[in-house]
Image 1 (cartoon, one colour):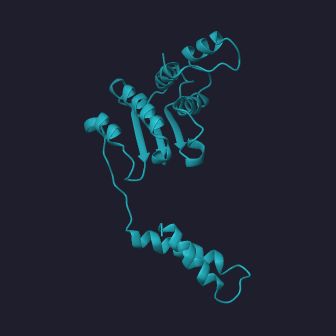
Image 2: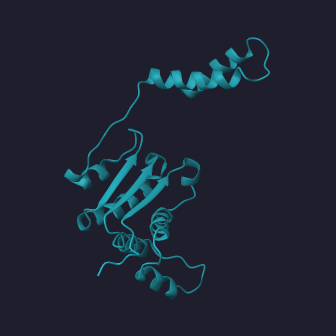
Image 3: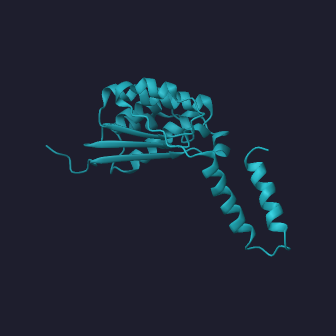
Length: 185
């Protein structure tokens, strides 16, 4: 019998912010994914409800291993596809990236309905993610030339500065100074 309360498609999204990443632990990211997936359903997964009922207090938190189990159980609640988007993955601390990669990779063999989109700078080490997905992964490099990035930055700065109440010549001087800093000079 088909359960009409079971959603067809699941979607979870994490935007990794560098400033927040300093205070977040790997369990926080996994918990966030679980929360987003569970919010798309009418009822909590049984394992999640059971574990929360067993916590010593309302402030108790499940372990990382419990959260991985929750994620796996939550994914089973969707009929067709599950999409997980990790944006700015390079902004996550190394231990967080490793835990997320381990968690995701443990799910891959058991569930072919999963699709992941990971956006990261090329400088981040995502080799573990790439090699763990094997032939299921398609790596698409989207890069821009440094000159294009520089032009975008310069246009943005100039647009903002020339709208201000600045003296003649100040916008150009400020623009050049900010632009040099943006390039690391």
